[in-house]
Image 1 (cartoon, rainbow, N blue to C red):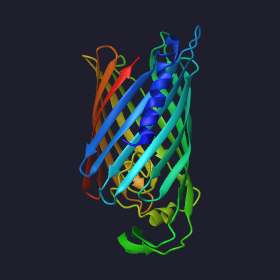
Image 2: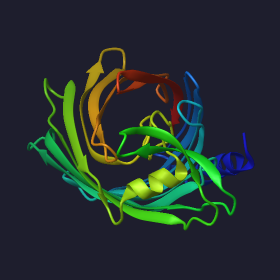
Image 3: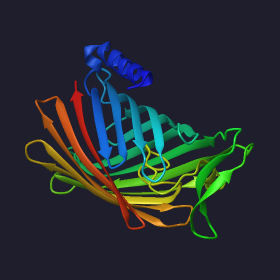
Image 4: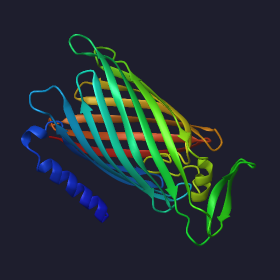
Amino acid sequence: MNKRVILLCALIATVIGSSPAWALSGSSLGFDVSEGVGTDGYAFNGILGLWPTGTAASTELSLNYTYLHSTIGMETRTNQYTLGLAHTVDESLEGHGSVTYWDDSLNDIHYAGPSFGFTYTWTREEKEEVAALSLNTDLFLYQTEISESSSTRKVFDTALRRYVTKVIPAGTPNANTTQLHPSLNFEVPLFDQAAIPYMTYGHYFYSQNPGILESLVGRSRFSGSSNQLNGMVGGFLNNNADVGVRCYLPANLELIPQFGTEQLITDNSWVITQGVELDWIFLSHWTSKLAWSRAIEEGVSQDIFTAGLTYAF
């Protein structure tokens, strides 16, 4: 475990541990471990809940670190840091934003930028949710620094429509692109809040052709990362959509199956994503998590299994 992770954990623990008792409501500390064929990683996350006295509003400050190392397709080693803030105005309106930094230290590429959005919830007179709509937007600047010496990369040849090995000459100019990703999420509770199905759709816009940057860093199929460029799917995306349902079961169990698809911008091909997560609340404050996720690309699947534990104050 590197020094940055240790410092981040110490910061999360210090902030939550030094907070007054009234601020601990809604706060939590969590840790996840992920494993798959040729893939391993872990994540730390902390939430500090702030509940002003005498008001219905609430504010949450969150901090997350995720690491993932993958040797599938092309080796990647990625780190992601996210600082977020969410504020609930009332039972109908909630706003949220975050700042993210991500880097792939093996392939000389990184991105940074804000995410922001809001959620509007329709409720009945008894304040029971009828439906909720979320609008979210990511604005990330991707950059890469090519070394002074030449390097060999696996790149996508649009004429041959397949990946080929190519030598990137020394002195090749650095590349960058700005990615804008708006998305919509809609949910409707059913069966007296026992099940909440949802659907999400997003589209990606780029300031410059992302294929140029993708070729320079040699992103290939099945290049896993902590989040963007793009999760278990290699390369930049054009569209994404997924559906799922949060099922609240007896014995404090929550089951979340989901199914989605992502379109690669390089060749407009579609990748299937699927997964399921099982959460269990026990001893009042603890939540355990078991999750499985899969990406199916050109008939080849990649699986990642995750286990986690969170303590809520």
